[in-house]
Amino acid sequence: MPKKILMQTTIPTTEDDWSIARFSKLGALLREARDGAGNPLYDVTMRDRGPPGQPDPVLSTIDTSDFDQLWLFAVDVGDGLTSDDCAAIGRFRRSGRGLLVTRDHMDLGSSLCTLGGVGEAHYFHTRNQDPDVAKRRRDEVRQFHGAGGVSGRGG
Image (cartoon, rainbow, N blue to C red):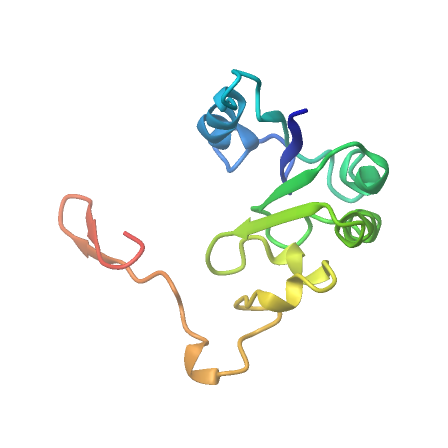
């Protein structure tokens, strides 16, 4: 029986942003994986969150779903998860099912701060700041070199 994975972002579908479409190759790779007998290893569902400001129809009920794993791509700027979403994800996790959470730099994905037990592991620039003040600095330094050339960390 294939493992059921939900791959979801914390933003609604937005053209030219970190929508779930950016992770389509990962989804395809998982869908193509087979066991020795040729059976699929994973049943992958990929989606972006519903409209912000209200519980996501899938995340807010994930604990009652048949998903085995949630792969959450936190790409919002602080409003990607509601309290209902967080409560259901917490129950999902406590039931023994898998949770993979990833985010990017600066404050991208900072709604994770509201995800009990998980958010505390992530430091952001404006929320849940690193207790080591020396580490509270811009994490994307770019140097511009004429004609649009960019170099340096993050560039």
